[in-house]
Image (cartoon, rainbow, N blue to C red; front, top):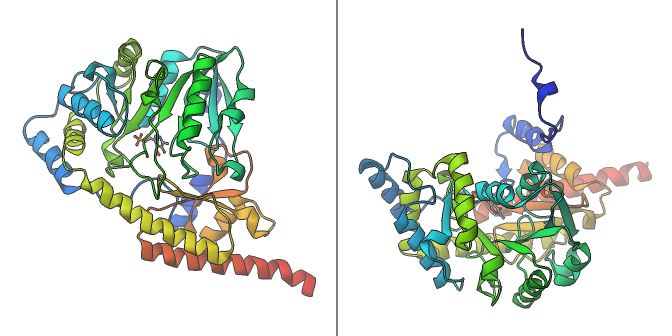
Length: 401
Ligand code: PLP
């Protein structure tokens, strides 16, 4: 007799009957030559010296559990790296290596959130922060952002959402899905607000090395008075193209890292030893590979913007990370971003995701990932123009008839 698992799933497990991403991936499976600008997974390879370090580590026996916080040389290299890029000073016991930054979000939520506590998140913003909080029965308070601030949070926008249950504020800088950077002065004001209201800040700086033009990320923990109330979440997936190695880290005062390390141990025991040795090569080796990737994304970013300008689609200024957030509503097609994505995939063979899957309160925007070479991006932009023209022609047809 089979068990009815659907009836036994816990209340907190939220399943949608027909998930948009699954549906799009199914459509894509049946098509040739789809240009995939959906996932946030770099097409670029992990740099060769990092792969070699992983291979050598395996050959030398890095096949066991490690210290739950990660191997000491890696924690030292991460602490050095944080400082070298303008961050706060941490001791190695204030660093916790995790199997991906995303895992860290759940460790933080379990360590800090009680039912009814409030966690303030940017909307749209990287969704697992909300998912992790919901699993603890905390209340997720979304601060809607829009084009007025180029999809970045401001202290003034956050202030009305603070209550006496507010515990954590999440800042994602650069933000995913919007590819935007919170200006340095605004980060200072947000930090001031956090101090006034005794909030813990989770500062997600995983894309901070990938910024464009004059845009720079101010590490929150480097601001006077913030180190003690900030958990910096970052990792190797984006800057070093290491998504599949599953390795990230948290940096925070040891009073927080020690209990979180207990939870991390219960979850994962430790991060894969081979990935830690590869990450050690990434953090302590030459850094020009990061600059090379940043330059490649910058070229792709320009290709996307030129294409969107040609189609007449407005977008948030892409300042960091590898995403462009573009406004389908600005095309005046009378369809949602979700419908546009499905149509674009089926007819134009270009895949991108609607902002709703990152919690956007409107269904107007799409996220385009810069995870294709520039020449493929140019082809994608031409295809987008063709699909937009076809939809316009359809809309015009009944009126003409
Ligand atoms: N933070 C942000 C803003 C992200 O976009 C992602 C992944 O897309 C992560 C964290 C998690 O990355 P990982 O778990 O690969 O370290």
